Image (cartoon, rainbow, N blue to C red; front, side, top):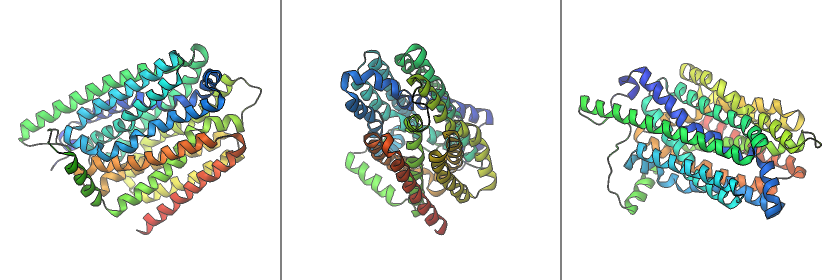
Length: 428
């Protein structure tokens, strides 16, 4: 590919694609943290039926079952996108997102927690895979100097969905019930599915015109279907992984330790905030609303700061220094949770998250070949979701007020590992 899509297409089309890609992920991000935001109501609803300890154990499945398919899918998902086309695969992934939230909505309406767990599993089949497919198309259209800005703007817009979810989901649940809150999430995923269909149509139509005009295949991916048996597929996967440069694996280690330290902590921070800082005599709904607002602060910071940071990364470079600053802020933020009211911790973690996420994801395109881009992102996701699964189970099984300090220490340990990886990258 001699020319990137951003060199051939009007800026309006490129940013329309970016906007539609963001809307396509909006429902995904809106519904991801709904179980954590509504945990207290879930416990109140199902504890009489299953018992408090078993309900808490089932609740952990809503995150661990989400991660399970994302340990398996990355092994073949990148090549599935390469062989069958990212557009076809993105529609399949979106189907699982919508169907998964539909099962959660149905399970809540009939008060069956097992249906909700099944819905989270189905959501996991499509959720992260849809994010990767979106990353591929953004990299396709913005290869060049605007790549960091485009990815940061995408991160900003989709994280606004998380902010919106943390703000309105507890309020909808308080006024109209938990089932209505899940139903609103289901409606938003339907709108995201419509945006994905429109985006794929524009992308496909534009690509056909360019192929016809230039008489050659354009884009990162060949959308024709190739016949490949399973053994050949596995061999090609292993051969491709073996060619990834050393710096790619270092970045993968850094990314994995960062996200398991920060995002897992934020996802479970609602319960920590309620236990550590909110009044015991307040109602469950009131504490849930306040905790949800505080929980959304990091995503709110990311929403507003990511485009500016992405623009700076494009202009200034110095990606390693941005990663270093993000690393230092993780230490500060997690310590602040134990010492002061959570708002300070969440603001610092939000700044750290914005710095790190705006830098790490765009680094992939600079360290691997373009034809390996899809599978390299899937390798990222494989390592990340494996650690997410382990950490989510540990958090859910051992979470209690008496050992919050132990959890903070374990998170700090992960962050120390992140610093070690960063130092190794700097030396490398």
